[in-house]
Image (cartoon, rainbow, N blue to C red; front, side):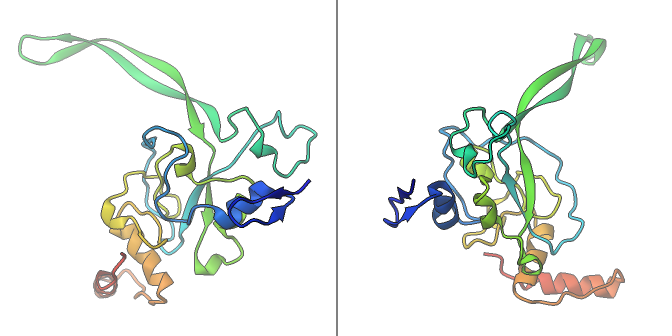
Length: 220
């Protein structure tokens, strides 16, 4: 049965998908979390991007074996009560017992590995650049995917394969250009968006010219 969207007044059979596609948060802009708590930082490794010109929006996919077992409802994630955006992950932690010494040092008297279970988001990367026009993060909203900020998780750097959540204010876009942890990840993305052809090569002269090109770009 069709339901009415309160924002545009039209009826849709899949109201949840319509609201995510048409009224969802802008990709790459600050979004208020729907969970009333501070955005969580998981301190995952930053890592260099394999290709500095590929922007990859980090999203969280819904996964639930219970609600999808034999059921083919397109919007099952709207009614799922099994915390579909997180999974349990075992995280090892080294715990030491130390004995202080008079000279200010200490002796490790015991060391053990404690395994803790932590709820981790089902993170995915979605290419979002001119060279990947067929893959748009907004299309993922139709399948129930959400941005990390919508479930109380701090945004991740949007360079491919970088999972840093330490985003300086200067690399937080105010117009949808994304979140990045450093100029090394932010400026090549902007160059591609502006159709700036960066100097190629690893020779000193080529690197200097490329750095000069990037330095002239205004990310914000």
